[in-house]
Length: 267
Image (cartoon, rainbow, N blue to C red; front, side, top):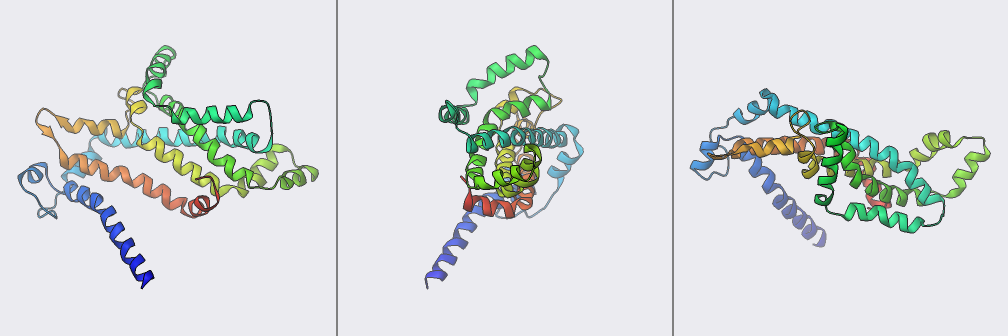
Protein backbone atom coordinates (compact mmCIF):
# COMPACT_ATOMS: atom_id res chain seq x y z
CA UNK A 1 0.00 0.00 0.00
CA UNK A 2 2.83 2.40 0.76
CA UNK A 3 4.20 2.43 -2.82
CA UNK A 4 0.66 3.16 -4.08
CA UNK A 5 0.28 6.04 -1.66
CA UNK A 6 3.62 7.45 -2.75
CA UNK A 7 2.61 7.15 -6.40
CA UNK A 8 -0.72 8.84 -5.78
CA UNK A 9 0.96 11.59 -3.79
CA UNK A 10 3.52 12.13 -6.55
CA UNK A 11 0.78 12.29 -9.21
CA UNK A 12 -1.16 14.84 -7.16
CA UNK A 13 1.99 16.92 -6.73
CA UNK A 14 2.76 16.79 -10.46
CA UNK A 15 -0.84 17.70 -11.24
CA UNK A 16 -0.70 20.76 -9.00
CA UNK A 17 2.67 21.66 -10.49
CA UNK A 18 1.29 21.55 -14.03
CA UNK A 19 -1.78 23.72 -13.32
CA UNK A 20 0.04 27.07 -13.79
CA UNK A 21 1.67 25.83 -17.00
CA UNK A 22 -1.64 24.57 -18.36
CA UNK A 23 -3.35 27.83 -17.47
CA UNK A 24 -0.66 29.85 -19.23
CA UNK A 25 -1.00 27.61 -22.29
CA UNK A 26 -4.78 28.04 -22.12
CA UNK A 27 -4.52 31.84 -22.13
CA UNK A 28 -1.86 31.85 -24.86
CA UNK A 29 -4.34 30.15 -27.23
CA UNK A 30 -7.07 32.72 -26.63
CA UNK A 31 -7.46 36.32 -27.68
CA UNK A 32 -7.22 39.00 -25.03
CA UNK A 33 -10.86 39.95 -25.55
CA UNK A 34 -11.90 36.34 -25.00
CA UNK A 35 -9.83 36.09 -21.82
CA UNK A 36 -11.38 39.24 -20.37
CA UNK A 37 -14.91 38.30 -21.47
CA UNK A 38 -15.33 34.97 -19.70
CA UNK A 39 -13.70 32.35 -17.50
CA UNK A 40 -12.88 29.15 -19.39
CA UNK A 41 -11.08 25.96 -18.39
CA UNK A 42 -10.02 25.40 -21.99
CA UNK A 43 -9.86 27.56 -25.14
CA UNK A 44 -13.14 27.21 -27.06
CA UNK A 45 -11.94 29.21 -30.05
CA UNK A 46 -8.25 28.39 -30.39
CA UNK A 47 -6.16 31.13 -31.95
CA UNK A 48 -2.43 31.34 -32.65
CA UNK A 49 -2.45 35.09 -33.16
CA UNK A 50 -0.35 35.64 -30.02
CA UNK A 51 2.38 33.28 -31.22
CA UNK A 52 2.25 34.77 -34.72
CA UNK A 53 2.76 38.21 -33.21
CA UNK A 54 5.93 37.01 -31.48
CA UNK A 55 7.36 35.13 -34.47
CA UNK A 56 6.63 37.87 -37.01
CA UNK A 57 7.53 40.97 -34.98
CA UNK A 58 11.30 41.46 -34.82
CA UNK A 59 11.01 43.46 -31.62
CA UNK A 60 9.66 40.28 -30.01
CA UNK A 61 11.60 37.39 -31.48
CA UNK A 62 14.90 39.27 -31.26
CA UNK A 63 14.35 39.37 -27.52
CA UNK A 64 14.75 35.59 -27.45
CA UNK A 65 17.80 35.79 -29.70
CA UNK A 66 19.41 38.43 -27.48
CA UNK A 67 18.69 36.43 -24.33
CA UNK A 68 20.15 33.23 -25.77
CA UNK A 69 23.28 35.08 -26.94
CA UNK A 70 24.22 36.68 -23.64
CA UNK A 71 23.15 33.68 -21.56
CA UNK A 72 25.36 31.38 -23.66
CA UNK A 73 28.25 33.85 -23.42
CA UNK A 74 27.85 34.05 -19.66
CA UNK A 75 27.75 30.26 -19.26
CA UNK A 76 30.96 29.84 -21.28
CA UNK A 77 32.78 32.66 -19.46
CA UNK A 78 31.64 31.45 -16.03
CA UNK A 79 32.81 27.89 -16.66
CA UNK A 80 36.11 29.04 -18.18
CA UNK A 81 36.89 31.17 -15.13
CA UNK A 82 35.43 28.87 -12.48
CA UNK A 83 37.11 25.60 -13.53
CA UNK A 84 40.73 26.63 -12.78
CA UNK A 85 39.62 28.65 -9.74
CA UNK A 86 37.74 25.69 -8.29
CA UNK A 87 40.73 23.43 -8.96
CA UNK A 88 42.97 25.80 -7.02
CA UNK A 89 40.59 25.83 -4.04
CA UNK A 90 40.27 22.04 -4.07
CA UNK A 91 43.96 21.17 -4.50
CA UNK A 92 46.00 23.93 -2.84
CA UNK A 93 46.12 25.67 0.51
CA UNK A 94 47.22 29.27 0.65
CA UNK A 95 46.93 32.23 2.97
CA UNK A 96 43.36 33.50 3.08
CA UNK A 97 41.92 30.68 0.95
CA UNK A 98 38.89 30.14 3.20
CA UNK A 99 38.25 33.88 3.49
CA UNK A 100 38.53 34.30 -0.28
CA UNK A 101 36.17 31.38 -0.85
CA UNK A 102 33.63 32.91 1.55
CA UNK A 103 34.02 36.31 -0.13
CA UNK A 104 33.12 34.73 -3.46
CA UNK A 105 29.94 33.35 -1.94
CA UNK A 106 29.00 36.73 -0.46
CA UNK A 107 28.92 38.12 -4.01
CA UNK A 108 26.25 35.53 -4.81
CA UNK A 109 24.32 36.46 -1.68
CA UNK A 110 24.40 40.22 -2.30
CA UNK A 111 21.29 41.86 -3.84
CA UNK A 112 21.68 42.66 -7.52
CA UNK A 113 20.24 46.15 -6.99
CA UNK A 114 23.36 47.43 -5.19
CA UNK A 115 25.51 46.61 -8.25
CA UNK A 116 23.14 47.93 -10.93
CA UNK A 117 24.17 51.62 -10.76
CA UNK A 118 27.97 50.96 -10.66
CA UNK A 119 27.66 48.64 -13.66
CA UNK A 120 25.53 51.23 -15.49
CA UNK A 121 28.05 54.02 -14.91
CA UNK A 122 31.04 51.83 -15.77
CA UNK A 123 29.55 50.49 -19.00
CA UNK A 124 28.36 53.95 -20.03
CA UNK A 125 31.90 55.27 -19.57
CA UNK A 126 33.63 52.54 -21.59
CA UNK A 127 30.95 52.16 -24.29
CA UNK A 128 29.60 48.72 -23.40
CA UNK A 129 26.00 49.78 -22.81
CA UNK A 130 23.37 47.92 -24.83
CA UNK A 131 25.67 45.03 -25.76
CA UNK A 132 25.41 41.31 -25.10
CA UNK A 133 28.84 41.11 -23.49
CA UNK A 134 27.79 43.78 -20.97
CA UNK A 135 24.99 41.64 -19.58
CA UNK A 136 27.08 38.46 -19.79
CA UNK A 137 29.90 40.02 -17.75
CA UNK A 138 27.48 41.48 -15.22
CA UNK A 139 25.92 38.06 -14.62
CA UNK A 140 29.40 36.65 -13.97
CA UNK A 141 29.31 38.54 -10.68
CA UNK A 142 26.82 35.96 -9.42
CA UNK A 143 27.39 32.92 -11.61
CA UNK A 144 31.16 32.64 -11.19
CA UNK A 145 30.99 32.30 -7.36
CA UNK A 146 28.18 29.76 -7.71
CA UNK A 147 30.17 27.83 -10.31
CA UNK A 148 33.30 27.80 -8.16
CA UNK A 149 31.31 26.58 -5.16
CA UNK A 150 29.63 23.74 -7.07
CA UNK A 151 32.74 22.63 -8.99
CA UNK A 152 34.97 22.70 -5.91
CA UNK A 153 32.71 20.12 -4.31
CA UNK A 154 33.07 17.80 -7.29
CA UNK A 155 36.81 18.32 -7.63
CA UNK A 156 37.43 17.60 -3.97
CA UNK A 157 35.88 14.19 -4.53
CA UNK A 158 38.51 13.28 -7.14
CA UNK A 159 41.57 11.59 -5.52
CA UNK A 160 44.76 13.63 -5.67
CA UNK A 161 46.62 10.50 -6.76
CA UNK A 162 45.12 10.91 -10.24
CA UNK A 163 46.84 14.29 -10.59
CA UNK A 164 50.16 12.94 -9.35
CA UNK A 165 50.01 9.89 -11.62
CA UNK A 166 49.28 12.03 -14.67
CA UNK A 167 52.19 14.37 -13.94
CA UNK A 168 54.53 11.40 -13.43
CA UNK A 169 53.41 10.07 -16.83
CA UNK A 170 54.56 13.32 -18.40
CA UNK A 171 51.25 15.15 -18.82
CA UNK A 172 51.44 18.91 -18.81
CA UNK A 173 48.89 20.62 -16.61
CA UNK A 174 46.71 21.96 -19.47
CA UNK A 175 46.66 18.54 -21.15
CA UNK A 176 45.88 16.75 -17.88
CA UNK A 177 43.21 19.26 -16.92
CA UNK A 178 41.38 19.15 -20.26
CA UNK A 179 41.75 15.49 -21.26
CA UNK A 180 41.64 13.73 -17.89
CA UNK A 181 40.36 15.90 -15.05
CA UNK A 182 37.41 17.66 -16.66
CA UNK A 183 35.92 14.38 -18.04
CA UNK A 184 36.05 13.00 -14.48
CA UNK A 185 33.83 15.85 -13.25
CA UNK A 186 31.62 16.18 -16.33
CA UNK A 187 28.54 15.67 -14.16
CA UNK A 188 29.56 18.70 -12.12
CA UNK A 189 30.21 20.72 -15.26
CA UNK A 190 26.75 19.79 -16.55
CA UNK A 191 25.05 20.84 -13.31
CA UNK A 192 27.03 24.07 -13.18
CA UNK A 193 26.19 24.92 -16.80
CA UNK A 194 22.51 24.30 -16.04
CA UNK A 195 22.47 26.66 -13.05
CA UNK A 196 24.46 29.34 -14.90
CA UNK A 197 22.10 29.16 -17.85
CA UNK A 198 18.93 29.27 -15.76
CA UNK A 199 20.03 32.05 -13.38
CA UNK A 200 21.17 34.19 -16.29
CA UNK A 201 18.03 33.41 -18.31
CA UNK A 202 15.59 34.55 -15.62
CA UNK A 203 17.58 37.54 -14.31
CA UNK A 204 15.83 40.82 -15.14
CA UNK A 205 17.40 43.77 -13.29
CA UNK A 206 20.83 43.78 -14.99
CA UNK A 207 19.51 42.70 -18.37
CA UNK A 208 16.97 45.51 -18.37
CA UNK A 209 19.22 48.21 -16.88
CA UNK A 210 22.21 47.55 -19.13
CA UNK A 211 20.31 47.29 -22.44
CA UNK A 212 18.31 49.75 -24.47
CA UNK A 213 17.28 48.37 -27.87
CA UNK A 214 19.99 46.30 -29.57
CA UNK A 215 20.44 43.71 -26.80
CA UNK A 216 17.06 43.95 -25.04
CA UNK A 217 16.13 40.50 -23.61
CA UNK A 218 12.74 38.86 -23.79
CA UNK A 219 12.11 39.34 -20.06
CA UNK A 220 12.28 43.11 -20.54
CA UNK A 221 10.27 43.05 -23.76
CA UNK A 222 7.45 41.19 -22.00
CA UNK A 223 6.77 44.32 -19.95
CA UNK A 224 5.54 45.97 -23.17
CA UNK A 225 2.29 44.03 -22.81
CA UNK A 226 1.27 46.61 -20.20
CA UNK A 227 -0.31 49.64 -21.83
CA UNK A 228 -2.91 52.31 -21.18
CA UNK A 229 -5.64 49.92 -22.33
CA UNK A 230 -4.60 47.26 -19.85
CA UNK A 231 -2.56 44.07 -19.86
CA UNK A 232 -2.42 41.85 -22.95
CA UNK A 233 -2.80 38.52 -21.15
CA UNK A 234 -2.77 36.34 -24.25
CA UNK A 235 0.44 37.79 -25.66
CA UNK A 236 2.11 37.70 -22.26
CA UNK A 237 1.11 34.06 -21.77
CA UNK A 238 2.43 33.09 -25.22
CA UNK A 239 5.74 34.81 -24.51
CA UNK A 240 5.89 33.04 -21.16
CA UNK A 241 5.35 29.63 -22.76
CA UNK A 242 8.16 30.27 -25.22
CA UNK A 243 10.57 31.32 -22.47
CA UNK A 244 10.18 27.87 -20.92
CA UNK A 245 11.43 26.09 -24.05
CA UNK A 246 15.19 26.92 -23.70
CA UNK A 247 15.17 25.71 -20.10
CA UNK A 248 13.52 22.44 -21.12
CA UNK A 249 16.11 21.94 -23.87
CA UNK A 250 19.00 22.58 -21.48
CA UNK A 251 17.57 20.10 -18.97
CA UNK A 252 17.15 17.52 -21.74
CA UNK A 253 20.75 17.76 -22.91
CA UNK A 254 22.31 17.68 -19.43
CA UNK A 255 19.75 15.36 -17.79
CA UNK A 256 22.20 12.46 -17.37
CA UNK A 257 24.87 14.68 -15.82
CA UNK A 258 22.32 16.40 -13.60
CA UNK A 259 21.15 13.11 -12.08
CA UNK A 260 24.71 12.26 -11.05
CA UNK A 261 25.44 15.84 -10.09
CA UNK A 262 22.56 16.16 -7.65
CA UNK A 263 23.52 12.80 -6.12
CA UNK A 264 27.27 13.37 -5.82
CA UNK A 265 28.01 17.06 -5.87
CA UNK A 266 27.50 20.08 -3.68
CA UNK A 267 23.99 20.88 -4.92
